[in-house]
Length: 465
Image 1: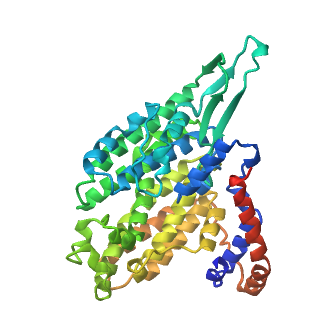
Image 2: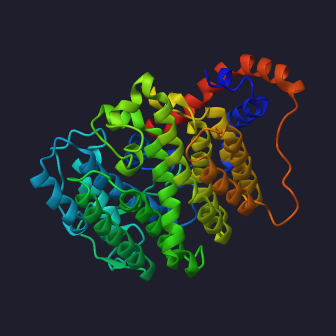
């Protein structure tokens, strides 16, 4: 139970209850499901099923940017599904990855042979493609004869929890005379999505038949897998006019945003990946401590495993100064929330993973109460800097005197704390006094079941009428 996991953290219990009782609307505005068509609800189901990290913040993006980011997400999810599917032969997969960006312009292309859990985005790719082609079009319906009684339906399929307003598709059930006027902004969005899809496909194909060897190759792999996502999103932010052109032009900072998230996931998912025959920890790192990457799961190899783990965490942390610089440039609140929340979740996850033997026994996750607290607090730059500084200090306290990476780890953490020092007045540490713990526990015990039932009913709205 989520509340029980946060018993030692009363502020998390408070925020969990606040979140349940409507506090989530501050960062995730509720969409009007009842006014949506069934097709739109289906799009939300797709996003619910396929999105892991970012779904919760997409729908909060402003204006037409939601359309672009939702489509961007679904297209890249389809591409990633092809890469991950081990049942697709290489002689089929490699050409698919190279050509995937061209499928956006093919009316009927789909792929029904995938065995991956997210295969529906490939099986129903024509729908995604239609949305890609029309998501930001300005549609004007003109009729010279009122007697024709033309019927039409505009389906604005958005993403869910974090990437919203997915598709804009026109369904006409007669032979209408319709004039479609495309906005210039729509073309800019399409160019970004197609370009990033093309570059990612090429990069994914490159690493299909080779392991990640050097630390430079680790950076390169993470660039293809996530750095390009950061680059693409930044270009979409600028194309939407919600952010300055500089945000879209600075590819290096955008790349670091993606690399930090991707490296965190790779570090955290060590055991899951090795069990499935995947290896993303770079050989240059793990070969210093073991003959095979899989050996780290053996209890007698724990000391070596932790040394390698801490080396990789330290490498991931070197991107945090760039993350701080990137976030400081953002001006739109919805874009800031969208970018900042995953980053603070990542540094919290890294702090939980650092020097933690549980990484080699399962998947280390932050508490739900911790995640909710971060989501509700990371809404301005001083608060984000305060969060980053706190987790940096937490990791510094965990550094072992015997760790081979100790000096570099402490150096990077000191740099992060320097960069995360707010320029304005200090941010008040939002922590509840322990005196409120018993009251919070009592309130949780009385209300949690009721609130949980209420939340479940609200979530069911997407499948409703």
